[in-house]
Length: 172
Image (cartoon, rainbow, N blue to C red; front, side, top):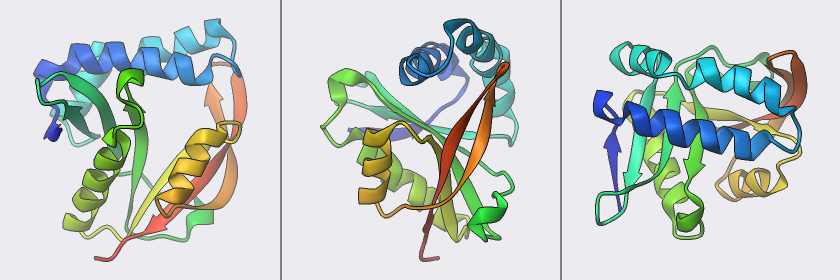
C-alpha cells in the first residue's frame, strides 16, 4: 500500500467514491433527497478541481499494490471550533476506506500520513467531526488517540445533525 497526493487525474475517483461513501455513511440518519443535494455540490468535479488546484484542501489517496485506489483522506486548513482550544490545527474532513479494504490497515495508513503532513506544517493539532451515531468510527478514532472535545450541529441541506468534535495533539 502507498499514499499519493491527489491531482486533477483523480477527480473522477474522488467524486464517485466520495459521494458513494458519504451516502453510505449518512443514509440511515438523513433523507436521501438532502444527501443528494449536498453531494451534488460538495463532491462535484468543479468543487474538487477548485480544491485541488487551490489551497483549500489536500487529498491523499491510498493505492493497493496494483495501484488501485482503496481509500482517501481530505485535510483542510480551517479555523478550529472553540471547543478545541487549538491555534495551529488542521482538520481531517474526510477519511473513507473501500469496504473490500476495511481491516487491512488502510485507514490507519491514511491517518498516519495525515498526522505526518500536519507535523511537517507545524500544526499542533489534528481534529475532525464525526456523526455521534457512528459508534464504529468514534471508537476507531479513540483508538488512534483522538478525544471528544465537544459537540456541534452539522448542516446537510435542510437537515441538522449532532456531530462530535474530536481532537488529537501532535508532537511538532
